[in-house]
Length: 317
Image (cartoon, rainbow, N blue to C red; front, side, top):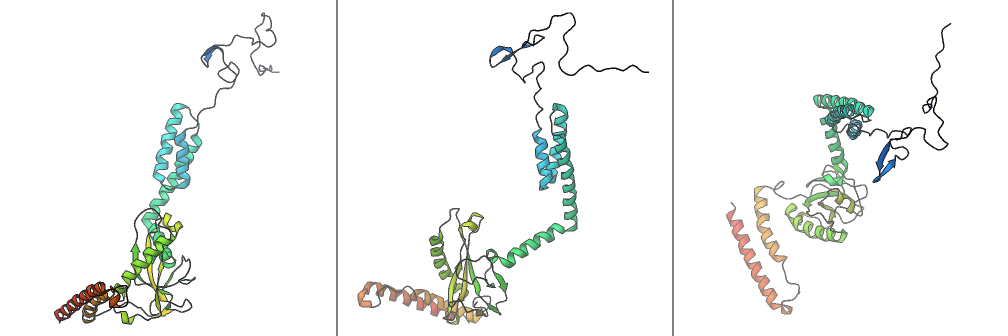
């Protein structure tokens, strides 16, 4: 039979033989003296006492960052570098977080490999083009001048969807101008509506230079940014032609400008626009005797516009 070795009992070391037992409530061995809170004396419980627990090691912050970057896979190269740095720091300082550093390094390595493979195969390009097509196909934010579209909610009220259709087909609206606004502060609903009314009215004749070609049933609408879309950078006012009756649609493009007219039509309408601009500046009073100086000044402007129109027409062969 082999002798059995009995391990010593758990707990604090036994008192040496031959010494009297310590009184109840006293530490059997004199503990070391410490300075705590500016005073010398016994260390408080848990702070380097002879039998108190040691404070836990600090978690390495770089390891946490490496794990976050590895999980998100947004910048895999950064996660890989941070993981390697964290492992070196943990080994040198004795900190915790080795598992997080290893996991972050592994995930970042996998993410970096996937990014390289995606770039090499052109997958990312196809995905981005698909996102652009999706936004361009359904959102009012991507409408451009000259495009025709249908809106599920019509041209009145709030809408976020616009399905592009050929202008030769029936459609709810036709974009004739896009106005880009500046500034960071939201102008408010009334401010945007006033600006849209003014700017869209000024740009209408540039799109339909032949005013006689614009049906009387066609009205001007506008799409303005909401308070929510403004926060995300939406700064565009979209000017739209639509039927005044919301239950009816348009058919065919209303565009009459340099893209659709020949040189002779364009020359005539450019000259005619000079006279039209002067005629629109008529005084507020209907009768000349109510404002004779104002009507006299207006008559002089109309005479100058007629002379300029004649000069422009004679200059065109």
